[in-house]
Length: 441
Figure 1 (cartoon, rainbow, N blue to C red):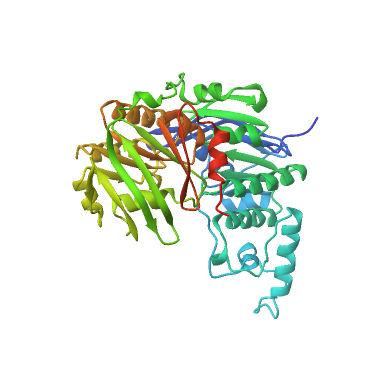
Figure 2 (cartoon, rainbow, N blue to C red):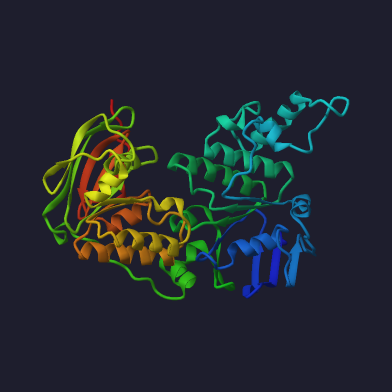
């Protein structure tokens, strides 16, 4: 019988006034990708911080490779072979990839003073070869994309001979192509016997990459199930302790046909190309597309946050000049970039603040990014209520199920252009992706 890498049992942790972990348990096997899911505040990060030595448990047992261990700090965890890759990457941009990986433990210093860069680069290259990563160890970290920096963090963890790798929302800032690269590396690690704890709010990813799922709620362990044996709806119900409200797919006809906003041939050099669309009263108009397609740039142009080179904007048929955000507010438009916030309650507070202005047109940029499924449901209910009250909403989202669930119509962008328009009845993930990848010749 294969011995678990990690066994946590009866783990308790108190903070002043808060019972953060209550008799929690978690098991990780070699070569397993084990998802840890739950709403914000469920205790996922706290449990993993106990495992990595950031916090000390108040009670319970922690076994690593069959032996009970004490992990008083993160250095001890690393020495044991337990590493965590946080959402906030901790690399030094002015150093090379290799220097970042081995900082503080550089091999082969010359006269114990000068770095032996050749040896440093050679050792980094060996790590890259192990996970088939195409990067030059001599490259400065400042020249890397977020996805590449994440791969460097993985390589750095492996340089400690890590057998346990904890990934916290690893795909939050990645494109679909970059996510596929990350999943390829995860599979390579699995084949090498590395156990991976995968923390994510993205339900569709769990089916693709994980073997088992452990659900937490309110600091308590709920259950562990095989990924292929459980539905997404069942996982969500366990996370929130109730069945979630499900909206019926909106019909185009359910939105009033009166036009409140018209955008005509909007252009901004290198960003937006001849973008035209209309928004109706009581309509949720979804904007879909891959990262960098130009959706946020369109929103910023409408709101006056960025200048335009040409084109016009009409509100209730009247041409308006919007050069600053306060001009947009005067005409009854708002944009809320909730992607810079965290937690569903903060989203709702900020939305409520703008609603006090009684704006007719609301622009939401990634309204549910980084929040848990329970908070997402509350945001969905709020947007639907606003539409029912006659507010007109532009919703930019990279979450295709969200776009399909919430939108009366969907505009799809690629390379700064609108490449397609679909009604809610026509739209599928496949049809959206067809237009989202329709590059200009």
